[in-house]
Image (cartoon, rainbow, N blue to C red; front, side):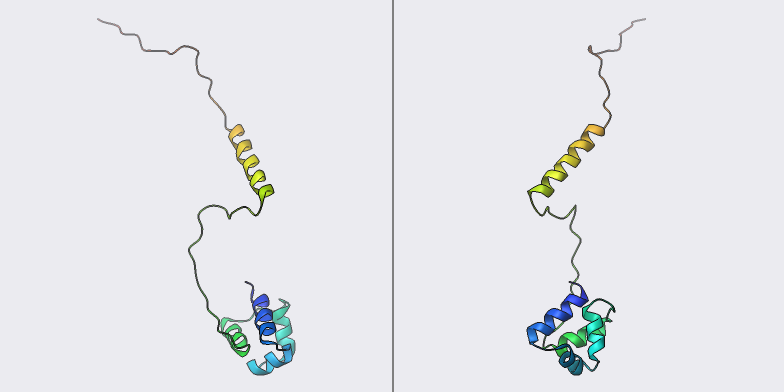
Length: 109
């Protein structure tokens, strides 16, 4: 979640105005507005302070990346991916094989 959305969600869940959140966090309402609209990015310390002012606790977690592409959102996306794979398979050049199998000749001396 983006910091702007997080600040807005926390503030609304607490039932606070931007001015009330700003006062609790020790900043100004225009700064909170700038954070919520994505015009400024808060530092981790500021984000933690704003979330705490809304009565919640910020938890940061790291997860291992998922192997491969993200899951398809719907059947249309799955179909598009299938078409891409089939087009890729068609683009791979093929070698023509001879009609008869060639075997080395055995020559005795």
